[in-house]
Image (cartoon, rainbow, N blue to C red; front, side, top):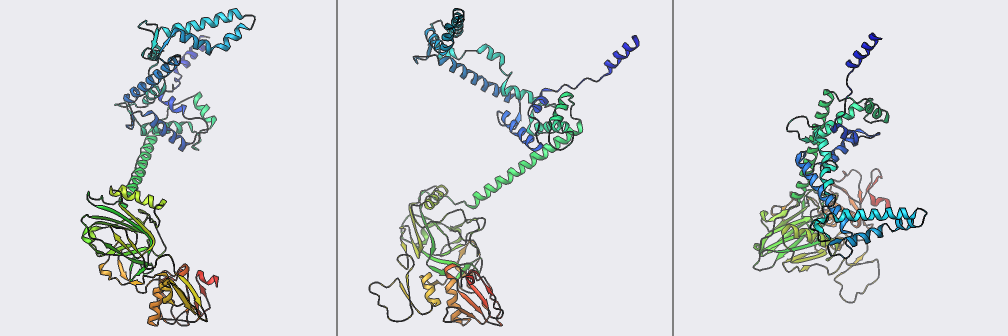
Length: 568
C-alpha cells in the first residue's frame, strides 16, 4: 500500500499541468464556432479588429480602452436619464415623488389588480405597494439638494455606483483589454497583423485534419484538452498575416491609383475669374472632314466655331457623339480654353478607356484640352434633359463656374460663341425624298428640303441627303487633335463612293450596285442606311478597309459577305 501510494504521489507530481487558455485566446476562440472556414474566419477577425480599434489608428492600445470606457459611460448615463426622466409627467424637467408614484402604479396596474382578485390578495397587494415605495425611495435618493425634486443633472447619477464598479469590466473596453493580452512584446500594442496571426495559429492548431474547416469534433476535442500553438505555427501564421496585409495594402493602393488616374483623365482646368463658360453639344455635324483621326476606317465630321467679338475671355466646352474636327475662326484671341470631347474612339464605336476622336484648327495647342477617356463628358441634343443636366453639372464642378450659355442640336453646321446661335444647312431633320420612276412631278412652295430621285439612287444625291454640308477640305498639318490626323485615302461613306466613281475605280449599274474592277479601299462608315452592294469582278483583288454593313459579292466564287447580303 505504501509503495503503491508513493507511486501514485510520484505520478501525480510528474504529470504535466493542463494548458490554461489565456484571455486573448479565449476571445479568438469565442469567434470560432463549429463549421468556421479559414477565409471567412480571418475576414471576421479583421472586421472585429476594426470594431475594437476605437481611435482607428490601426492598433489596439490603452487609448482604445479609455475611449470605449468613456463612450460606454455616456451610453449608461443616457440610459439612466431616459429611465428617470420618463417619470416627468408634466415635462418641467424634474421628477417629484408624486410623479414617480403615479407612473409606477400605472406601469404595475395589472400586477396590483391581479393581486386584489385572488385569495391572497391583501398580502400580494401589500407586497406590490412595498415594491412601489422602495422604487420611489431609490429614485428620490438622487435628490441631493433635498428640494423634493430629482433634476435632470441628478437623474444622470442613477445607478452611478454600480456603473463605476463595472467601468471597463464589460463591453468593448473589456474586449480590447482581453485582445491586448495577445501582445507579448513591448510596447504591448496589438496590430491587425498580430491579431490575425494569433487567430490563424489557433485555427491551424484546432484544424487537426487540415481541411481549413473547423468541425464540431475538432472544436470539442480542443476545448477538452487545449494546447498552445507551437512556435513554428505561430511564426508561419505571423508571416502569412504580414503577407496578406501587404497584399491588401497593394490592392488598395492600385485601386486608389485607378481612381486618381480616372480623375486625372477627366480633369478640366479651372476657369479664370473673368471668363465666361459656354457649353455646346450635339450628335453630329452636317459636313464630313477630308481629314481622319487615328484610323482610315473611322468617319470624321467637320464643323465650325465662330467666335464673336467681345471683351471677356471665353471658356468653351464642346461635346458630340461623332468624331469631329472643329474649324475655329473669328475673335479667337478671346478663347482662354477650349475643351473638346466626342464619344467615338475608333472604327468600332466607343471605348470608355480610350481617347476621344476630336480635333480643331485655328487655335494654339496649349489652349486645347482633350480627355484621356471618352466617357468624361456626355453629349446631348436637347436641353433641358437628363443628359444635359448631368453634363452641365460636370462642367460646373470642373470649371468652378456655371455655364452661362448651353446650346444644343442633333445636327449642326456651326456654333457662334458666346451667343449660342446655331446654324444648320437644312432647317429641320432629314429632307423629304421622293423617288420618281416616270411621268411628271410638280412641287408647289419651298422645295429646298426636297430631293427627287429619278431612277436609281446616285452616290452624290445620297451624299447630300446624309451630309448636306458636303466635305470640308482641311489641311492635316493645321489640325490640333487627340490622335494623329491624316488625309483620307478614301473619303467616308457616300462621299467616298462619289470619289471612287469620279476616279473610275468603281462604276454603278442600274441596280444601284457598285462594280469594282481594280484594287480599292472601302469607304469607312457604310453601315445601316449608308450600306450598299459591291460586286468584286473576277481577277480583282479584295478591297482594303472595312465594308461595315455593306454587301460584298465575289463574281469568281459567288460568295456573299456582309449583313446587308442576308436581306436581299
